Length: 335
Length: 263
Image (tube, rainbow over all chains, first blue to last red):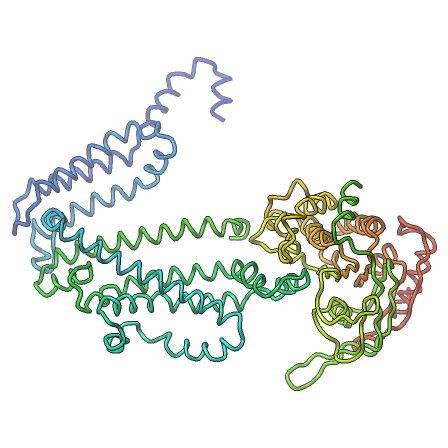
C-alpha cells in the first residue's frame, strides 16, 4: 500500500515518509525499559537504606548499565535483524523487570515494609553471589553431579522398564500392580530403606533422584508403547519383521511423544527431591546450602540459591525441548 | 516400464500364487459370546487372477483377507497358498489396508523400505525402493513425511511399500475406500496397470460394484454376517475397461439385484 502511494506521488511524499520512518526506527519500549532500569538505579543509590545490605553500588551500576544498553538499543535495534526482533519481542518484559527491581528495592531496603531477615532487596541477593561465589560454584558442581547421575540412571532404567511393561503381557501382569502401588509414594519416603541398602549416603541420594525421575518415565513409556496403533504391528509382521524389529523400529519411535512427557515430568520431580536428597549427609550442594542457610536465617542466601536452581532447571528444560523438537520434527504437520 | 523390469529382476522375484480356501469358518470372541463372521467359505483363486469380494459392510470380507494374509488363523477350515498351509504372515502375501498406515515418524523412502529393512536385505536392494517409488510416481517425494502427502499419494506409498517386496499375492482391503472420487478413478486404472505388468494374484475387498467390475476377472458376492458365498460373476472383458461398457452395465445390474438393490 505505502509502495503504491510512493510511486504515485513520486519524490513529493519523501519528507513525511522519512519523518514517520524515523519514528518507526526508534524502539519506544526500549526507551521505557531504559527509564525503568534507570529508576531502579536511582532508587538504589539516591534513597537512604533502612537496613544496609551491601553491594548496593554494584547493583546500581548494573541497573544503570542496563538502562544505558536499552537506551542505545532503542535507536539501533531495528538494524540488528533476527536478534533485534527477539529483543523487541521481549520489550514489555524488560520494562516489567526494571519496574520490579525498583519496587523491590523500595519496599525492602528503602522503606522496610518487607523486613530483614525474611526479605532481601535485589542487591542483597547480588551480595550473596559476590561474597559466596566460590562456595556456590562448588555447590552447583556437586548438585549437577548428583542430579545428572540420578536422572540419567533413573531415565535409562525407567525407559527400559516402560518398554518391557508396555510390550510384554507377562511383565505387565507382575509389574503394573507394583508400579501402581509405588508410583504415588513420594520418592523421599524411601529414605529409611535407602540408608540400609546403599553403601554410601551419596549412592542413596542418587537412588532417590533416580526414583523420582524414573517413575513418571516408566509410566508414560509403558502407556505409550501399549497405545501404539496395532495396525503398525500388523504392517510390520506382514512385511516379515521379527519381534526385535517391531519393538525397536515401531514401538519405540511410535511411543516417543509419550516418553518426552514422562521426561519432562521426571525432570521436575527430580529437581523437587534434590533438596531432600542432599539432606542425606551431603557436605556440599545447592540443596544442602539452602538447608544450611535456612537454619541460620540466611534467607537472602536461600533466595539467591533458589534463583540459581530455577535457572538450571529452566536451562535443562530448554535443552530437552530442543532435543524433542529435533526428534519429533515429523509431527510438525499435526501439532 | 523400466521400473517394472527393475522390480522383476529383484533377487527374490516371486511368481503369482494360487490360493485355496476350503471350508473356512471364523468367529470372534466377544468376552463370553462368540460372534460368527465367516461361514464355510470355499473359494479357489487361480495364480495371476484378480478376484473381487463384494458384500454389505461389516459382513466379514476384511476378516477373510486377514486370514489369507496369515495375520490370524481361522476357527476352522484350511487356507493354502500353492498347496502349503498359511499359518503365519509372510512378505510374499501383502495386505494393503484401507488406511495407508504409513509410519508417521519415517520418510516415504524409509516407509517403502520397511519390508527390506526388517528382513535385513535393504543394503543389497536399495535400488528396489527407488524402483517401487518410480512405479507409483512418488520418487520426488522420497524425503517427505507421510503428513505432507495427500490421501491418494499416501495410498500410493502404501502400495509401493507392498510392491517392493515383489509379492506373489496382493490382498487389497478397500484400499481406495477413503479417497475422493477423482483420485479413486485414477488409482483404479493404476492398480489394473500394476497388476497386468507385475502379474501377481490379487484379492480385492470392496463394496463398490463398479470398482469390482473395472478391476477384477471374477466378482464373488457375499451374504450378510456370517458371510457365505452368495453368487459369483465372471467378468470376461478386456482391460483397460470402461465403466459404461454395455456388458459391465448389465453385470452391474445383476450384481446389485443379488445384493437386494434392484433398480
